[in-house]
Length: 102
Image (cartoon, rainbow, N blue to C red; front, side, top):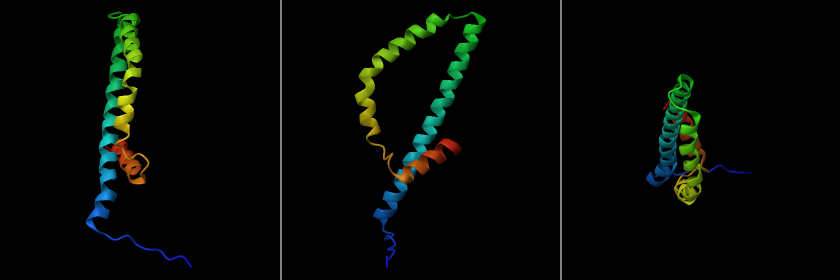
């Protein structure tokens, strides 16, 4: 027979369970805000191109230069992502709540 053992509700356990939720919530809010800003910038650029104020070439050249330099930012992004507990269920729950409600 399998016995179910409840975890001790010590301070260490509570912090270990709640901290990934808080970090996930903050990351979810940041991702949602970044997506909103990105969409607003894309719409603004499309409007400016449609009105003839800027040309697509003026947008693509800086964008391509950023994408070319992005390969040098890869190790930095991997190091930052290594700090996030993205394999934790509580982090994913916090991320979803932060993205949805934030």
